[in-house]
Image 1 (cartoon, rainbow, N blue to C red):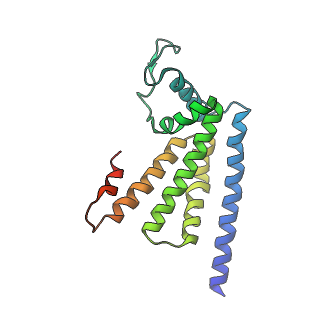
Image 2 (cartoon, rainbow, N blue to C red; image 1 turned 135 degrees about the vertical axis):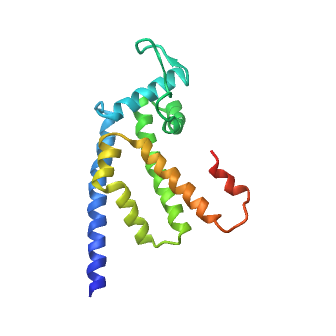
Image 3 (cartoon, rainbow, N blue to C red; image 1 turned 30 degrees about the vertical axis):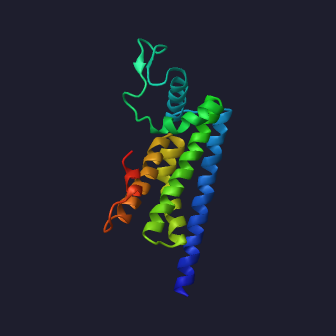
Length: 177
């Protein structure tokens, strides 16, 4: 009886988290039509300047500035193929979706490394993406590059854990970049 109650409580919490997260995901799709606020606007500007100038100096901004002097370019590298296919807003939304998929794949790799259950995977995925602090950071304030860092952390830590007591082979060196 207690296991049934705990399982039902877990399912309700996960469903509420997924529902809350789905509203925030739909809000990101709204950025195709409405100009976003917070850090999303600066990410759009960086994508635009990255499309125009690459890694060079951006001369349109006061006396010019170097684009990636103070921010990591990984998110924008991931968005570069989308910039070649779409406009800046569409490529931004596509890059955000790619980051979500990468974080889910990294978490799945992490859980398979520890041979965790599928319930644990979904619970942790909802805990990572749908808790109020993450929703505010990733989907309201626009700190999507930090979500990309979580994805790389899950891949890297899972790979390190896989080779903890094993001989290194060529697959291990994927962690170096």
